[in-house]
Length: 251
Image (cartoon, rainbow, N blue to C red; front, side):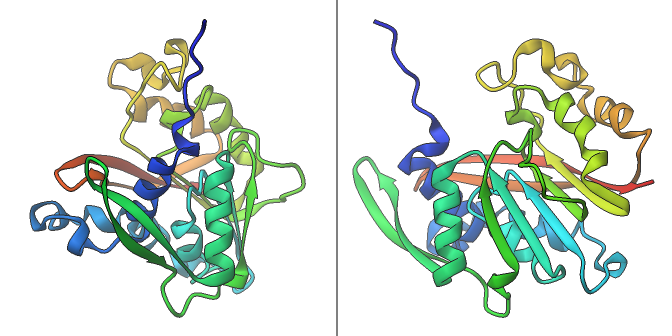
């Protein structure tokens, strides 16, 4: 009998790990050694350190592809009149919609074995949550009728797609001329998400070069920087990664 593999992104474990990634405070969830590198603020920094808010008009629109539980979408709402967050995980979208409606959510996370702790995720004060809406859908094929955007963010998404090049080639239709495209990824190519033949750069350490080639006809590179991030599994186990961020301007 064939075993059906659990969808990690619909699991309770994923919900807790991503709520911590998006909204967790370093204490008491992370030891000082992990917190010191700035990784706990990764999702926030995708906006604060990558977005050039000076280029935005008062009625700017933003699209957060692969929004997960929504923190970057809310951060974009500091600068944009309308933000649309899209994710394939219906669980993540339910959580993000709850945070939009209520502003906070209490959840349990693993400490060790079956022992858990409780934490509260909260949207920072001062953000107009009504500017944001969340849509369940395939980030590789965004729902029809969304229109075009002044900002499109794809944070740590391309190496979790079945056909990342196809998605990248669709982006010019989503970003307005002069608009900003923010791409981040640690380039963790795995066959369980992306068939080997679709790994950008052929799996030979040339992912960024492949992205540049695909985007070059429609985008120019404005900035390139490293952003550390951390996924907390339990009190003594953490996935520490460094995403490469590219900020691209639509020609």
